[in-house]
Length: 383
Ligand SMILES: *Cc1c(COP(=O)(O)O)cnc(C)c1O
Image (cartoon, rainbow, N blue to C red; front, side, top):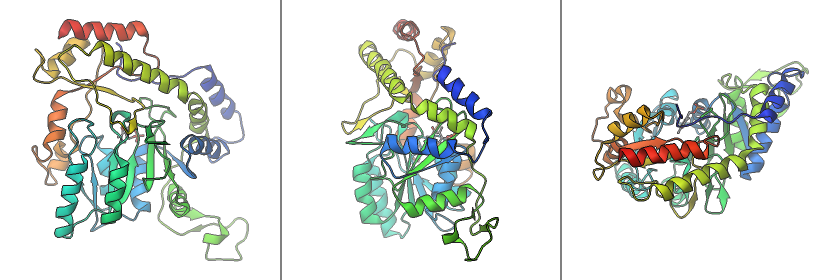
C-alpha cells in the first residue's frame, strides 16, 4: 500500500540516535536545548520549548495563557480533536469558528462576525487556537488585528506547518501568534516519533512553559522563595506535569531539522505535479492563499458534485489499487464527546461540507515519481 504519509529516516538519523544512546544523557541532557535552538533558529524566534507531543504542547499553551474555568477557547472544527481538547484539560469551554470554503482554515469573516456577537453578550474568547490546515498558514495578519480589538490570545496550532511561511516570516517566528505549536509525529514534516514544541517571543511565557513542562519545579534562584537555598534544593511553585521530550527523541529531531529543506522542496514538487496533472479532472485541488507558502503536510482534494463518483467510492477505488488515502478531518464538533456537550451536525456548515468531499492523497518526501504517477493514473481511471 502507498500510504498518505510516512516518515523519512536516513543513515544520519540512525547515527544521531545511536550516538545519544551511548552518551551520558538519555533525558534532561544537552540534546534538548540543542534541538530547541535548531528549531528556534529555523523559525527566527527567541524561545523554543520541547515537549513530549503537540497535544500536551497545546495543553501547556492554554495553561500558560491562563485559560481556565469560566473562559472560552475558540478553534477550527476542521482539525484533529487535540486542538479543542486542550481547552477542556484546563477547565475552559470550547467553541468553534467555521472555515473558509477555499483555504479550509478559520474564516476571517466568520471570526469577525462571531466576535461581534460575543462582545455584545459578554462571552469573548480568552484564547483562539488557529490551525494551519494541511501546512497552509492561516491568515494571522487579520487575526492579530482582531486580537488588538478584542483582547484574546493566539495559539497557532502549526502541527502541519513546520517550515511553512506566512508573508515574509516562517511560521513560528513569534511575530503574530502568542505561542506556536509544532508536532513531530511521524506523519508530520519532521519527526521525533512522539514530540512537540512551543515557540514564543515572550520570555515570560517561555519561563512559564518550561516550569509547567517539568512538575512546576524550579532550581532557579530568581523563582525560589528560599533565597539561601542549598545547591540540591528545588521548589515546586506551580502545578506542572512531566511533559518532557527525551534526549533520544531530541537527537532524532535535530538530525531531521537539518534535512528540512530537502523535505520541503520534495513536498512542494509533489504538490506541483498533482496541481498540474489533476487539473483536468472533476475534483478541486488545494487553493493557496497568496500570503501563505504551505509546507504541504497534506495534499487534500475535494471530490464534489461534478465527480461521477462520491468521495467514499473514490477512497475505496484507490484502496483497491494499492493506495491508502486518508480523510482530514471529521469536524470536531460532530464527535460524540462534543455532541454530548451541546454541539450538533449543522453548526459549522463549511467544515461539514468540506469533510463530505475531502480526500488526502499520498504526500511525503519518500513518495517516488512512479508511485505518484500510479496515484494520478488511478484517479484518472476512476474519475
Ligand atoms: C497531529 C496533530 C496534533 C497532535 O499532535 P501529537 O504530536 O500527535 O500530539 C494536534 N493538532 C493537529 C492539527 C495535528 O495534526
